[in-house]
Image (tube, rainbow, N blue to C red; front, side, top):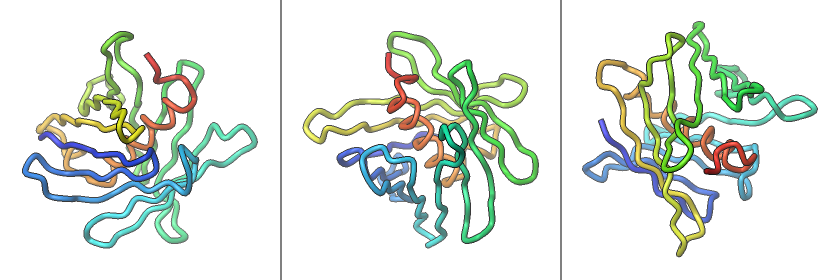
Length: 161
């Protein structure tokens, strides 16, 4: 499947289907803050926020329940672990004209994010392509979490190319 994400002032990002149907949004408390919220069209909400002294770990919660975490490694990758033991690697692929990718534990790229800077809004937009053979590409909260990952890598200078 293919999706688009429209960013507004790097604080609000909204996910759309190819047909233009709104699916959910990622809202930051301020420009590239580590605290944000994912709000799905169904009304389900998730909170995202960094933990630890060096802010190298991020906790994902729904209400008071932790549902996952992000950990940054020395290779410039993000290790995404979800409840139930599912683990993925999010990383930059390529240097010039590269993209971000979500990889399985077996190094299979299943989701591709391409970042586009919109000068008039001073914000990033994204296009997302998913491998239809994997259910992760249909998980709207996961797709919005990947936007968070790409924004975080960019703000830390790890995603700039």
